[in-house]
Amino acid sequence: MTIAPANLLAVRRLLLNTLNVDPGRTRDEDLEPAEVGIVGDPAHRGGYHCGSDRVVAGDYSVVESPRDSAGLTLYASALDVGQFRVQSGGRTHNLQTFSTWCVAQCVANTPDSRDIREIIYSPDGRVVRRWDRLGKRATGDSSHLWHTHLSFFRDSTKANRDQTPLFRRYLTTIGLLEDNDMTPEEHAWLDAVHKALTALDGRNSIGQIYTRMALGEDHTNPSYVSPHPTLRSLAAQLTALQSALATLSTKDFTDEPAIIQGVLAGLKPESIAAAIPPTMAKQVADELARRLVA
Image (cartoon, rainbow, N blue to C red; front, top):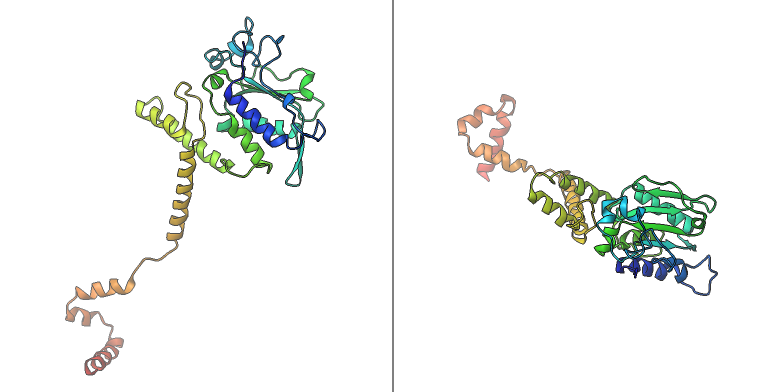
């Protein structure tokens, strides 16, 4: 029978623990457990809410991507999120703003959104739209006016790949969680590293292994990149190094007296005398006489 994978259950817990803060509030204010679903009801056939026992012939959630066909298991690979409304940071956040934020991350191809195949949502509660990574479809049925559907490529659920970073980043961005995840700047830095290292892929096996190890990439899925704590630490160290170098670049390390002394030490007395301008000769002679007397 179709079952819910551990990685999507973790996302469900994260959302409910953060957005279901007061069970006494009205249904459209708090996100209720019944509003966050993974496995379709028993009558559900076909699509990402179904595992291998419920898919149908030509099922789009299997045949349109090798990531799905290779990742087909008994796991469902979708998440439905219902309505909520919270105040944070002086702003109101709800299902519509959450959905449009998630779509924007997918459009930007952030590392933590690359396992999402599609999002069916409403930006305003009046029209239904669909973002599809494969560009196959652009809309959905009217039930998505009050809930948002997210499909994940099946290979990501098969591999039990952590899907919480994207949602934790959303909750951090709106101020409901502490900022203990990667910042957008760190994501941009990670992308730059990924592009630089990926240039080695296909040229030699060392480049391929290094790219995947450095980025925490799943070896069975060459197109996937997941943020890695080591890279966050390395990014902080590089930033500190850049700051130190910038500070040093403004300092003058020239020891002029030592240079002059070194030059003079290599000259003969007659050479030094010849180098003194006539207008200064008497002043130098007087100074030398004064020092000899002293």
